[in-house]
Image 1 (spheres, protein in one colour):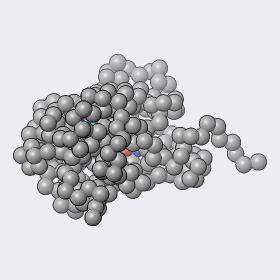
Image 2 (cartoon, helix red, strand yellow):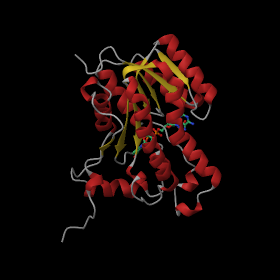
Image 3 (cartoon, protein in one colour):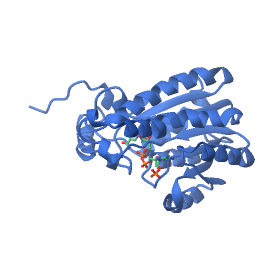
Image 4 (cartoon, protein in one colour):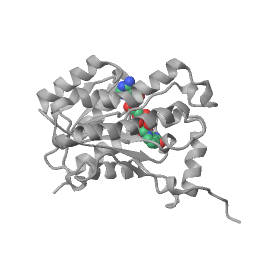
Length: 260
Ligand code: NAP
């Protein structure tokens, strides 16, 4: 018996097999879920389709979350193929690369709005468009990072967008709770992915995390995937509006000092 037997999930945010979304897909597939995927543009379609096929996905659709039309088209297709969504996974973020280095103060108006739109508002847009596809017992999950709570060098406008995303999780959880729909976020420790590669100084941050985290290692997409599968399962039926850290304990450390 899998944790997600009979459940249907849609996962947005697979760029390649290093993506956190792919770790989540593998864990959900292992637990018995039927999965659908989205991609942005032809180049990514070529990478996403084989991955989707390897877990028997019945739905692989384009969806740029900057477009209401594409979001609507995705929901129409989901209605046709699955008729409902038990798990909606949002693993999407974007900011201009030149605003993920140096001073936050240099963030431009357009860069700020773009990061907020794609990384924060898109969760609300998706949930709104999903409407009654999200039936009682369904679960919405997004991915965040601790740069929303504390200043992290170079994370800048993405930290501000993640703070908005985390607040959105609480408001959406409040809106959807009476319908029996849960909304949560996983705050992952640093993982080497395409998106992470865009943040200046990521490599040293990644190394440092493994040195100071209580578990003395970095987390993997398998760690995040396993937690995601559980959090979206009926085993976690009493949890909503939460930001759950999967970071080997890194966020609990206030000050780290070297060995004497
Ligand atoms: P990733 O593999 O690069 O995935 C990011 C995904 O976002 C890509 O599939 C990307 O597609 C998609 N995306 C960007 N703009 C989009 C748009 N307009 N419409 C639809 N999709 C769009 O990186 P990842 O690290 O797994 O990121 C997944 C999530 O985890 C993000 O929210 C990220 O902030 C979060 N997270 C990551 C870490 C980490 O250390 N890696 C830690 C904590 C949280 P394109 O490639 O086409 O842009």
